[in-house]
Amino acid sequence: MTESPLKNIDRQIIKTLPKTDLHVHLDGSVTPQTVIDLAKEQKIDLVQVSKEMGIGDLKTGDKNELEEKIFKETYDSLMEYLVPFEFINVVLRCYEGLKKASYELAYDNFKEGVRYFECRFAPQKHWESDFDWLDIVHAVNDGMKQAANEFNAKPEIKNGKEPEFKYGIILCGMRMINQNMGKYFRYLYELHVGDDLQNLAAMASYETAKLVQICREEGLPVVGFDLAGREDGFPAEVHKKAFLYCYEHNIATTCHAGEAYGTESIKSAVKDCHVRRIGHGTQLFREKGLCDKKHRDGSPFSKEEKEKYISDMAEWLADNRIALEVCLKSNSQTLPDLRDLSNHPIKNFLKYRLRIALGTDNRAISRVSVTDEYERALKLYNIDKKALKNLCIDGFKASFFPGMYNEKRDYISQVIQYCKRVLEQV
Ligand SMILES: [Zn+2]
Image (cartoon, rainbow, N blue to C red; front, side):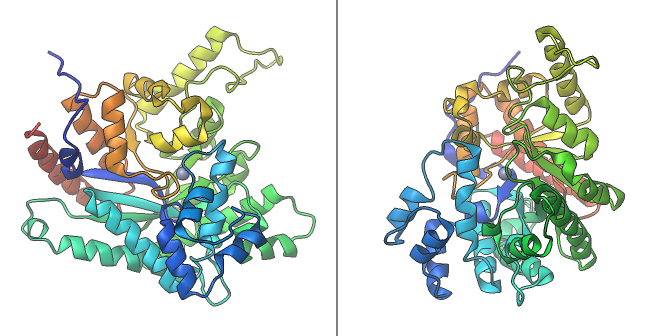
């Protein structure tokens, strides 16, 4: 007997459920008010920054203006959606600024019942000559650790009735770089005369992959490497050296793919770069215009051949438990076709039994929380109690957990028991 979909479940129950966010960017989660506060503390004039960077055309730099021109309600493309990040990063280039942003991100997650999250950021965007690599990652970790310690002091955690609040850190390389991204990229550009930007981006992401290893040796909870940024015209295989370094050193990897491109981009991430998760994967089933597969003689695949190619790939992802980090609201903002999320391919993901981890992408830029995303998914996609439990638990299973595999299993067992208890109320 199949259970009925939980379309109108009480929001409080969603908040209480043990959830994860495996796809959340640190800079994209800094609120307009925090940007203003940090700018004030650091004596940074946001109107001037807007003018110099050509971002937002600010006149006053107050909260309303930031919400109207930087943290917009809708964006026309992924390219436009990526613009605000560089503006926000201007206030995240010192220990206090980065720590405060990290603390707030962790606090907001834990407060809405996210028991485990993995926050990602590109350390090179934060680099200053007096704010070096390990200082940067320590600042992020110190902020998150502070929030975790506060939440884990609760009696229900101490007496083992509820699972602990935990987190991991993922360092990002960038597919596309520009001089607005900070001093590191500016110097890289100036010092390597004649190198094209993709080569420089690949060089930078290889450095980031090595930093992951250094952080792990330092005992920091850095759990993986990601490749982020503009996808069209900036293929993942350019960054193969970084991914192979991770593969060699047992570093877990994920990659933004299938956000602006289709199955071939996802396949490249999995087969060329050995990733264990895919950031978004939204276009996996988009045959029209996005699957450009050709035969050896150059003739294009027929419609049936494309469908077979796509469904074989989906089967392979499902069978190998390669998780898709699905961020619904962000997809609706960056992909005009998905303004109406009832058209989202998540229905196909569920049909193929792909492992899905719901995430926010950017809490502030997308104006979204994990609870919002669960609520949205439940309203739109006929999810019953069993599927809801799987959705919660799959996030924990797909995590790059900062600890031994046995510890991860024990933690997940505890999460499953707690999840069942919460769902008994439904
Ligand atoms: Zn993302």
